[in-house]
Image: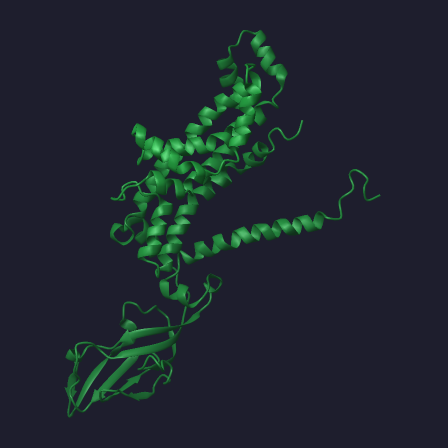
Length: 385
């Protein structure tokens, strides 16, 4: 009875669980990147993104006021202040321990008094108030370092996005890289769709000598490695004067995307009802009219499906941009290359890197979710008769 048509397979639950696991594996990194893009550098370095909603224990290094602020009270020189007024100290922290040496950052409890190495004492209260006393004047140009161990409440900020998108000196203009990526991606998506649509229609519905050979060549080009053609193609572009610029990059993406586009669209078009096309020809429609008024509207799912793939591939591309967008001034730098530059120049600023990475994936996510209903229909093109 288990093999009767219409009976639910015993593997249904296994398939559903596998799908859920795969979705979670893709979802967790994206959510983590999104959460990290709103966190501060200290919070990212001390706890994972899954603890973003809970207080975390952090070690803060704060300097007391400089010796030039000391006052004399009788025979004692005094420096007073509050450690929490430092600009880098988060609001709402609760001190659990403090110290004056990096080797013993939690040697004292709030309210304790510690001996200073250069003479004098310091007392730190739980609310951040401190008092330094010495029978001799404090010397030096900088204040005493105090190490605080404290519970820091969750803190989210939009400064990371402001720095990434609008601060050119800090990020070499990620906003400029964003528009450069759009300049590369939009034409590199539209051009192969237009060319492939014409070619797919010809291979699907027009009889001419060598059509089967052309289809076989298109299928064969699907397995040609991208890296194999980069250097010869760059030499060709340099020879005809379109290398090192947007035009050469558009042509490269078009060439690499055409085999899949033609194959996908041809499989979809060949499955369209023949009666519609023959009736149009009987009524006197030209091949161009049939293509524009009948084939293109009916092939929209396949066109949208390839548009998703091509857009995602060109948006996330680094290799082609590195080869064909060689610009020492950075005027044509795309986002993937800009993130690589951030890794080299700001490797410790994980909050900036997380924000830049999420900005780079935000647009592909919007495109995918907006057109996902056409994806499956386009992928299944020609697979069922």
